[in-house]
Length: 250
Length: 250
DNA sequence: ATATGTTTGGTTGTCCTACAACTATACAAA
DNA sequence: TTTGTATAGTTGTAGGACAACCAAACATAT
Image (tube, rainbow over all chains, first blue to last red; front, side, top):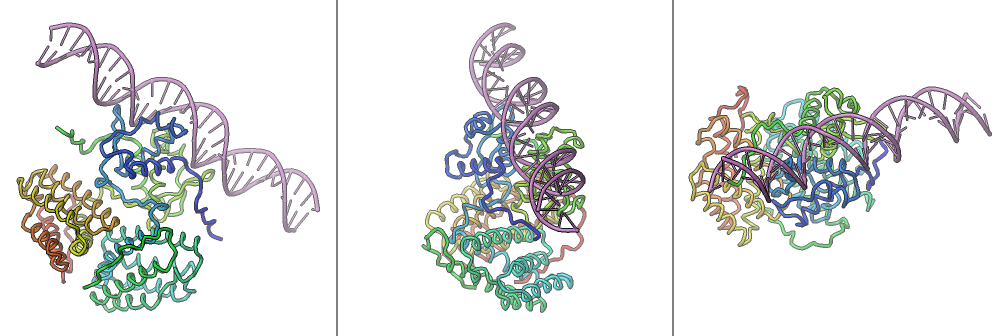
């Protein structure tokens, strides 16, 4: 066994728990933008941890642009629009509704990424993508290896755009997808939910191989749209199916 | 005066400098994925800071998914594809070439965001966007208020998509743009480089008002493409004009 | 010989105290 | 009114101490 599969709700690392707590307090409006946070001593006493733990948490919040600490004065909440990092709260944002919005973003990004990749992909890019495709078809469709190959497939297409920003964003979204898959398998081990559709991937690959920009875009859009549509089948925690009416022209 | 304009190259906060240092060491391949970092004691001694500083830095790197610390064992470098946060190194990634790639991503995202916004925008959304537009036209075109209104305009369109993920991503990119504008004005105070084109914004707004999805997409794409094209006029630091040949069909 | 329990050294996690650097405010003096 | 100064409070950094934990070597029993 390569890995011990870190327990899903591990109870460790105080600083990250504190950081998550303060972040949620801010998100809930408990502290408004511009407002001053309690001092580190007060936070330490209130939460029953040492000041070191508070400092590690505060350090992270500052790095993310969530708060702004001024020596000799205090720490202040920043406007949420001015964050300098993107990070999603894993345990909070994994309802079905939220996942569908994530897939909408994913569709936008990867559709255009596929188009760019069709125009710019090198021979090596194509080979790497093909390898991932082969690994996907080789294994059982809901096996770990197949899911991993699926993610590699999407990432390598993003890499073929020769745009590191696009690659970074797609990698990040893939990582979120991986997390939500892990949660989905944990709560509901039905394999259909994470089944990999090989045929759709083949269609994307053939378009990339042919250098057909428009075909690559359409194949990728259809693929991600289908994957997103399957989310409804899964029993998420929130029952808010309201208003997910999309407009799918183009 | 509302703000003291934080000095651009401030020499403060050791933990963030340490975090940036280690991040760059990893990015440079000095430490490979899976490899173990030096112990916190060694890092503290090597860099000449206390272990507390190291711990704050390590805490941030772990939160970003750059390293993975195991109690009793050590800290290990993770694969760059598995990062759990997006953060760009401000001082490293601000060449003209890099900015053009950022604008390519921005164009993809905001083009589709404008399309979604045209279909979904509420009356209030439209009003907020119009306010930003008015502030833009009211002031001098390279004034601070005009630039700020420009960013608000783009952010509010993203908000009108009713997709918080899209909104978060667009906010993040806007923040990067703001930083690069600040740098650009610092090194080269020519106002033309950050000039705001009101006419293009008006065209986007009118499409949103009319609910014309296709017109909104085209107007936004043209706008961002023009803004990106202006980057070449600015004297970036790196002289790598090599190979910026993009394929701009559509 | 294999399996199991134990020791040992090393690493991260947390706590504590102390002091330096810095700031806003109040107060005193010109 | 302005300017300088003292003061209390806050964040930044340092260093030591111990707890929690782990891997590997070692010892013991079956």
